[in-house]
Length: 83
Image (cartoon, rainbow, N blue to C red):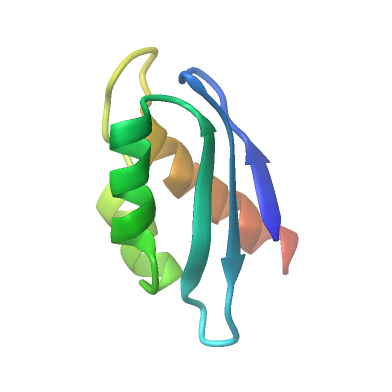
């Protein structure tokens, strides 16, 4: 399980698993607006890293970011960690 500490959002961290085909599983936000984060978790389930990252990058809420945007940053951090 990969865990990313968020910045600028109500959520404090995001964790997820990635399978051998590069698909997201078990996405969990720690904190944040529960209804919104549950929606993002379900929509991300089983999608490829690239698909989720490009779909969510740049979505704004406050402080120049959002929980979905932070998931895109978490995916980028995950990619950098497995190089």
